[in-house]
Amino acid sequence: MNNEQQTTNNKLLDNWEKKSAEHQKQYKNFLQRANKNKVLKQLPALHEEAFEKIDCLKCANCCKKYSPRFKTPDIKRISKLLKMKEGDFIETYLRVDEDGDYVAKSTPCPFLGSDNFCSIYENRPSDCHRFTLMKM
Image (spheres, rainbow, N blue to C red):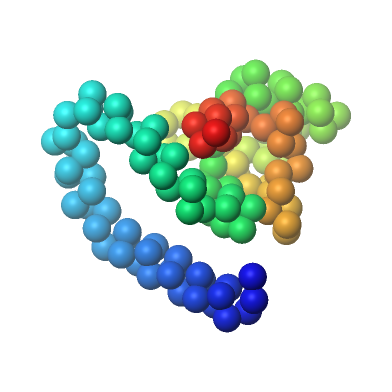
């Protein structure tokens, strides 16, 4: 991808983010009124359609802007991989969010490399694993 294409893509992404933020309340109201069973049935197809157009390694916005939950098995597995005590891992990388879940202390995710590859991909949190399964 050349610089002109990258600039165009960045502008499109910025524009999408602005429009999305402007419509967030409208989307939330729509989803609260929607028939959840119908919506859930449509999600896999919509997800697949979106990922036909998105190259995760070029975008990585999910890792740059959001954090998965780190559940107890995730914390055990990742801290072992990093040769850290679980308490040290939590203190170094995690915080408790408003729902009482452990999430990354910082954004982007501390395990996201500058090349948009995950440094703990084989041991990533279960939320990340489920997300990548959805797009396959």
